[in-house]
Length: 305
Image (cartoon, rainbow, N blue to C red; front, side, top):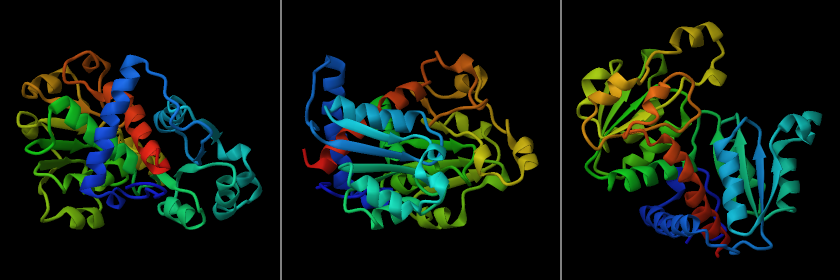
């Protein structure tokens, strides 16, 4: 049961928890598609504290709560909050918990969501902490693979781009280690997967590491593309050198086998050409849409409804 539990890492969820979330998300998706009005969260309030920019994550959490009949209070820009006056994260959380029932937080510092949960008597959901984790995005990613590919087990998943700073990748790999999958990791050498993440999955996953994407395309079932994380670089010249390291165009899409899908946690910069958007493998906008039913399921289960 997830009732009253904080979700800071994908490791906080058991296999049974994940399967229950997916079952509930299927019900939520059916309700969304049928236009059924829901009031599961009537009188409940979700607070979103976003210390970093966000479109999909913040809006899909807020949409999910409102679709469930609940209300939302939001700090979408820390510059217009008391943070700009020097208020600590601990004090902010202590105040906001008195206004709400669940807190969703995104913060540029790794470990901030865990810290927030220590000062809150209400459940806290990590919506991304620096280059740490993004557990709800991983739930959406797994759900997308399950819905669009039929299963997760037995797939070959090629992940490309910024593996060093990409928190979505870190959480996803941790989760994929629970399944029978093959993983190809493709990135510039300077943006390779951090050692602590690699050591976590080593021995649990069959992993190939390379700087060259093309040899893997013909055997790839899921191509998971990430952007170069500009905001994580201290050296902007290094970012300028690495931007555009990989680009998926119609040529690369045509090299994928039949039934393969292309995913991206978004936003994209130039790593997927717009010409790919209307091709059959492109599932990244569908992936973003699944964020609403998955987060509806998670909110409902945490609230105990």
